[in-house]
Image (cartoon, rainbow, N blue to C red; front, top):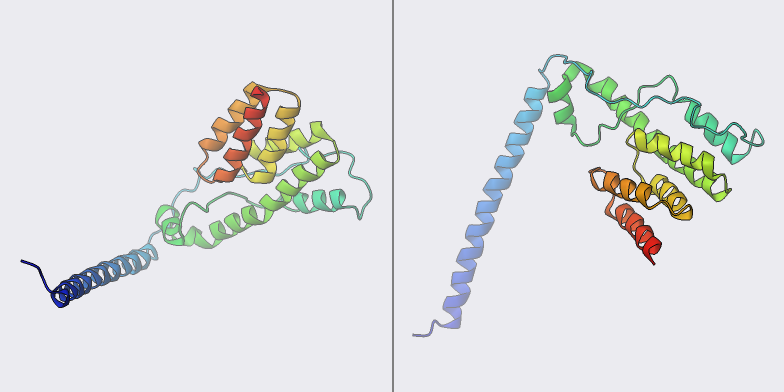
Length: 205
């Protein structure tokens, strides 16, 4: 027995209406749960923050020869050094609610600043690596990039610098280790890992 086209349309409309109502209820519950969780997080007392891995900025990874005072390298190094007395850490993996739940509401403002400092510093570190690499100062570029990696800064400019240095000196072991580290870093972009693997393949040719 064939179902008339009109009947099929009605069945589809009924099914679609049901699905829309179901998802609306689900979305409403998710929203309610989120705001309730956010409300409760506002009452969480201060907690220990000793598990946070802070980045310490020193002159140890910066080049000694920085050129003219108004040159890009010198200006860049001075901007990086302006973070010496600041607390810096990557807390981007946690939402505001999660930050308050984990460390307490009283710590939220200061930790937001800590994460903001990280966000501001990271592009400066990446540019430093790029600039030294472009100028052919490979040992200094490697030193800066290694500081970044040890601090958890696994951005494209940093790993491009380090990966290409290892490629140039034909060090497959260090390149493999860098790839493994990048793959195990959640914040590391897929295109960055792909770039490193392409360099590794070139070494095999």
